[in-house]
Image 1: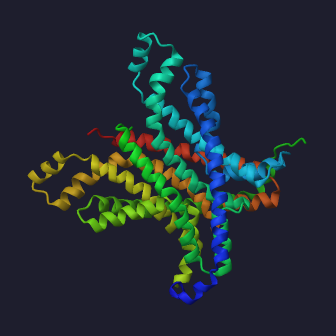
Image 2: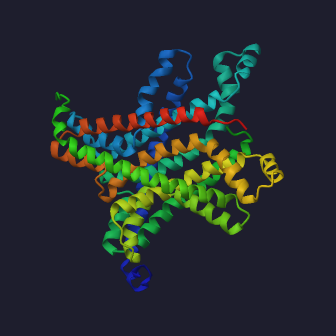
Length: 223
Length: 220
């Protein structure tokens, strides 16, 4: 039972822990940047999905459907390995950011669309009856409620995208997962190292999960 | 730079691709069964009277949902030999993916269990069913029917996640794609095909699931 041979744990130096913690920074960076871009793009696509015009409504699906129905890793490799053969040379970091952002956007758009649809249609009629125009109804009536529905679900999406960011280690980015691999191979203590790495991911995402649950309860209505 | 897509050159690797698809299906089938059974057990534990069982299931689900699958996979693949347990990559992949999918399955089955109203329990008690009989003949069938649709969407997620198993050198479809793209130097075509194949599979599964769900749907 080598895992409980504590003398071997001396192989795990403070410098290794420092490497793991530093790489957690890169994981955060990739996640936060792609979430920010994905949210903006997803908001646009989601609002477009709410349009009455059939063409406008349909167009975002061309992007969203492949992104939602294929593995993230395939999308990442298509961009990172595939685009250069078409003549677009792309480095690992932009490729990872582009993939994660697009992926987030596709899922976020669905959340935006469903949150807006969840607001009863009668509220639109009420708005018109009060003399509001379409924009005013959106801002003053629909958006406020839709956002309250949206936020807990968005946080849940963000958590899953944080986990997905571990896949960027496949394109040789030195994120938390890659650092874990490097240190585990060096110290030959996979049980301990992957445990620590999992612990860091957990520490980053569990508070968010609690926040999502709290907000969901507090808003009072759930879909 | 002009580039013409050439899918023809990939034909010579079709044998490899078929092997890859078969291995992916094997992984998915195995972990589907493990994930469903574990998920059901966890769901029952979360509803049980014992605080210990409830707490265990809650921790299990939270840990799995808040850590990346890739790390879980590495943990089992590289960590288990350290405990003196030696298993091959395929077994590790099936077990890890099964355990991973038990978490969302647990949530879904649990909400199915919660949707069964007390009236059903009272009716079964009136008919002289024991607690176990009530669970087996009344509660379980109803809640599984209610959970069927979300379970299939969990299955779709499982299939998409299975591509990560390429990380432990398994030659499932993703691993094959990586190898072939290095050999043939046609990465764009290969990953495009793979993307389309996964989409088609996903659509097929959800189409079939919808058809079945329409048959077994019940309104409570």
